[in-house]
Image (cartoon, rainbow, N blue to C red; front, side, top):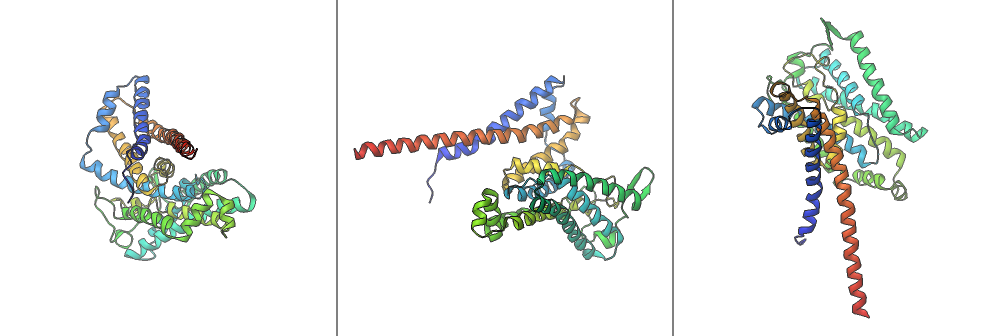
Length: 362
């Protein structure tokens, strides 16, 4: 059994502690600088959420966590899949269009729609992987461009083939019988398909730690040369990792699509920005399933509570976005500072042990 090491535990907790303190201080300074009341902001943020808000937090956490898992798959491979936004937007449109067509009924309609979302997200993301392996195009550049193309394409398809009602446009309404059973929920309930987030988290952990593919993925991310020497095809791994990341990204908005009380499908109710939140949460949680869970819960809590700022205080809800950004930056900086400090302590301990060993043999 490993012995209890207070120093190791202290160093593990030091990074999050520094990040929390820095986030609170910076956010407070920003609020004061714009002329608002930091006290009102923090009292609203720490006020226990109402039942409806708690439900919203759970639902938002599920979608943000799924996005974080999709981003983490790329990060563990050493790839920056910044195209989650376009991938889940296009995948959501394809799934909503199919579900609205009611080609199947009941659970089959939902299940096939989910498969379509995965396939579209994977195919769109794989384009960046193919460009990287065949033309040397950075996945950062290609996924940014693919984001714009996907969002523009969905807008075009909605305008051309969507249902126009007044000032709104959306895909064909999803029939409650053929499309939502047994996932129909009354407004205010936790969406049934939040289970996707649970499966994504468990699957991500199993993939990385219990499979040969996960080992190859981590090895390729740490050193492509070593991975290639051990028999791993780096080009195939890049394409596979990007496709897998995009496939998970395709599921991001599915809980909302099949969990809304309104049966519009994809349209004005579509929630953009989840892909970028997922990237931030993956960085915040250091690509670890449990760490990302706490990060997704934090971001969902801040997003839901930001609505209270509008009604209870004069603080702009945009301050929440600043808080989220500061939290990510603080975590990255704090962990790097702690890592360097730990390395220096380890070097000092090794030097002392070598000095003692030399004196003993002299």
